[in-house]
Image 1: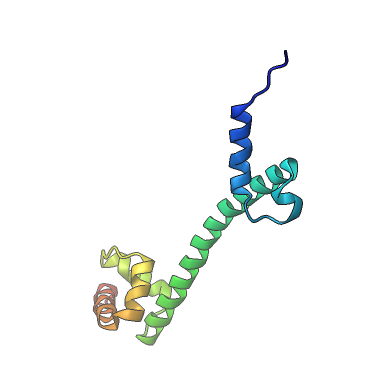
Image 2: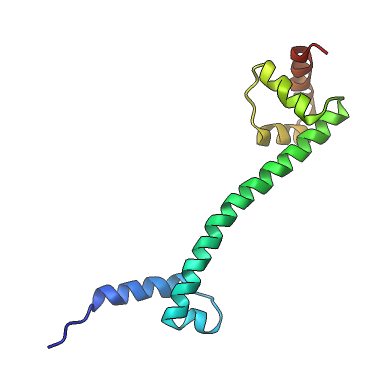
Length: 118
């Protein structure tokens, strides 16, 4: 008598079907093309998580640069001053401060300016 994989194979297929839910045509119903599509989708989602992080960092830098230039420093000078002043604020926080808490950003900016000796 021939043995089959049985329950294990069904579970594996069901997992694939679940992850391919909503795919169009054969991509959602034919096992081989479904496997290829699911693997490719995983690769794209991994890559694009990195891209999203990159895009957000770019956005934060643009916002900080705009806020710093309004107050008379370039972005690079501002970041150098932060390091000199030993202020450990990340770009996300600085960006949020520049938009939602201008007074707080002004306080940070004053310390940076003092550290730069300008």
